[in-house]
Image (cartoon, rainbow, N blue to C red; front, top):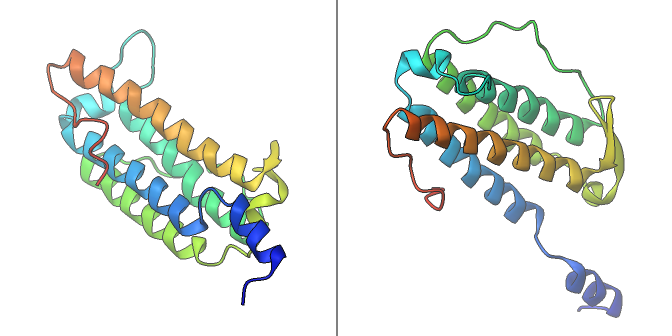
Length: 166
């Protein structure tokens, strides 16, 4: 039986944790498609206006997403591992992307109830609510994927439409 308190909580929910995860994973699916569309050489070398190549942008997303969800679930924040080996091929980058997707799925299941409303200091640097941090991960990915769209268009490659997120 629903109580008044339960009804109040439900009326305040915009997204459930499962819906938020699905939303993020749809964006990750689209970003993976963008990675796949790059020719191998250009993925690692092509740049416009001093921006980083898309492989570097994708690696930043990887370095943020997996450790970010681990931190949310465990409340233990490791810094970014800037010294980890960088992928040298598109296949290696896609494998890292897929491993990160699994990491997100595995750790997401261990995020405690109510955790999204708690405050934390992400990577020892950025303070905010957990939901704010997760939105930052998603927003950062969308921002960098937009750069990938510009690169692909400059290479005369039509990128996957932004609404094709599955």
